[in-house]
Length: 155
Image (cartoon, rainbow, N blue to C red; front, side):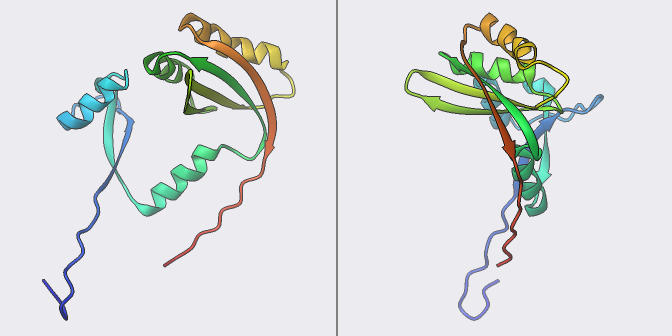
């Protein structure tokens, strides 16, 4: 309904792809299932959940990673499908992945919390074994310390 000559604003419907819960048989929208297949992922392993502003902020902060010392294990993949397979195999509750397009392939950085009790070479071997099996070139590791500050602007 128009008020004072203004058109009503459509509400945005936000969805996010999440791992499918055990026993969840809800069918995916065919467009979402096809997009997951094109990305090399099995649509049977995923479902959709409503997204909102609070979830988007939490997801953005979670994507940065936890505060503290981290080690990024970096690899170059020639094919996107191989990069996504490595991500599917290696990402868990303690490991985040960032992917970017490079001129000569796809760069993937797997970020894990630095463990002072584990040698970096030993920790890197876990990632390198999976990446090498998928034809990736090892680009090494980077150690960094991260401080997360969240500033929220309300409009």
